[in-house]
Length: 285
View 1 (tube, rainbow, N blue to C red):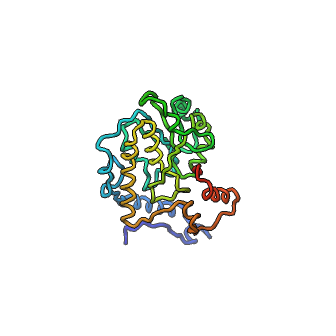
View 2 (cartoon, rainbow, N blue to C red; view 1 turned 90 degrees about the vertical axis):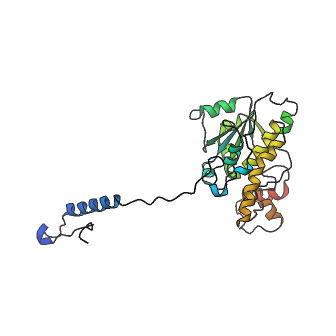
View 3 (cartoon, rainbow, N blue to C red; view 1 turned 90 degrees about the horizontal axis):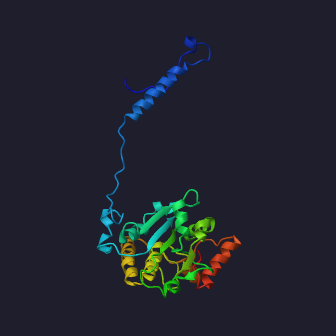
């Protein structure tokens, strides 16, 4: 074709001297080629329309399972989210936010947080009303903490770390700000209903489930838990109906001889897996 761009042009030695090449010809040809490529139409990938409330594709919208109006709560929830969670298709935090009023579910994305770069988060962590939900030996039972409080007497803030269990543990240990609030944990015996994602043990809960239980305790209203778990159950049911498999916890797989992955060689990881089988009280984050 006459109009096709020249990517290179070779000049005979007789024209330019022995063993030489006119580099300007080659450069001009490349410029022309890239100019022609730049004028080609760009085919944009067509994205599925997304529901603005539940953040799900409109064909699998979960809004019928959300409360007609956002739940009225006095507690402010702060979800500190690992960046990897933003790209997960089946994340539960958007469902949680859709159930609560604006300003009651705040998402902060990152791995490391300092007082200099995150002064608002630092102020939140220093607030006496702020709690951080993270299990461990120094954690207080959340139900015991609010047992003798009147409803709405204290407008708590509660921080929940959103990520895999290893990510949550790393974020908690590496951020000194998260050691400032009172540390609390859930002592209710619950089994996760988030069956389309693997949990370390049977008593480990998803972020939405943790928030549902914590808010029902702080607001002293068990109906909140049921309302918040309804869209999660609908999400799991839909996925299972369309080919997803039930994900048993690592604890369940180990106890029943169903764990088919190579056992770790690292001694600490081996002890952690042994703890899944023997420890029934603490969720291993």
